[in-house]
Length: 191
Ligand SMILES: Cc1cc2nc3c(=O)[nH]c(=O)nc-3n(C[C@H](O)[C@H](O)[C@H](O)COP(=O)(O)O)c2cc1C
Image 1 (cartoon, rainbow, N blue to C red):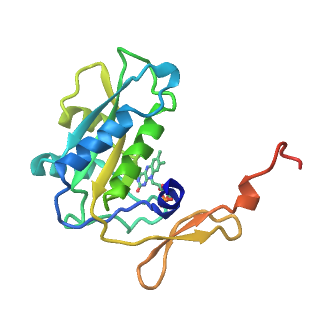
Image 2: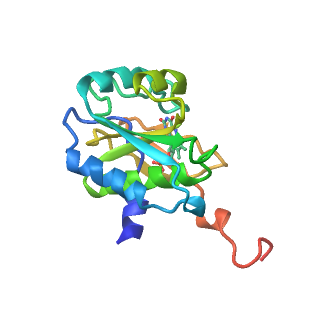
């Protein structure tokens, strides 16, 4: 069931040194292509990055786990693929909400195939534009890093309003989520 998959997916930042099948990467982009798009304008384009040399060029342009400065993939644990989500400014000046929806579609299809993913917004867009040889009309909106998981983060409750993910003594990443009681009401906010 889709609900079980969505609640089981966690961001993965450490990956096994094992290639990601091309068919799965294509399926991820195909799912993004067919996802909802504001006014059905479909301004997004995609680049699949899986070539070893390109992977090594992209990796230094990414930033990981802002709340935990020492928690990032080593070169051995680096992503084995990325999907770059691009905005085609010839179609629309801004991506609206489409890029986040596309990123989630990619993450869920990847998860369904046993892959981990991390949506990356903290990226050096200028340098990426060069590495990806983008023409003037294309801008990088998000990257989705992909690979077979080499970590198993767990969900936790938010305590005292602290949403920062943290590492326990065994090196397991805990990801606090706000409770349903905190985030949901019926019909009006005051009920
Ligand atoms: C738009 C967006 C941008 C993100 N950018 C980064 C990033 O640059 N680096 C990173 O390590 N994680 C990034 N993340 C992952 C979030 O930190 C992660 O989703 C959050 O900690 C909750 O964990 P969960 O995905 O396991 O629920 C991003 C997530 C989203 C939705």
